[in-house]
Image (cartoon, rainbow, N blue to C red; front, side, top):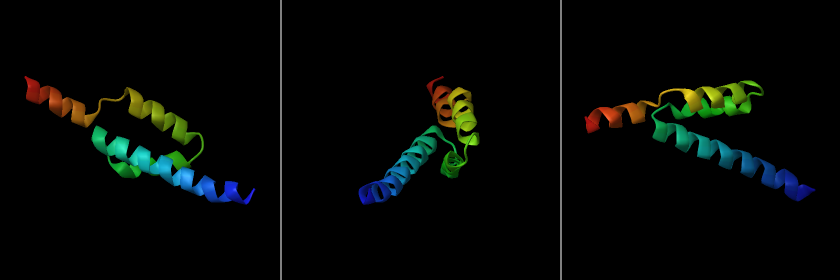
Length: 65
């Protein structure tokens, strides 16, 4: 059981780090990752980010024209 309490924070920090990297690559502020720690709001924000226009994709589309 002690191993669980050691690995749980490590896993949570790893997930937050992954979320930070994804948001930074998408062109959003990486601090939005902290929303993942708030219940209910985290699910809503994942949907918002999934269906919003990503700033980096918009910049790449303008460069291709």
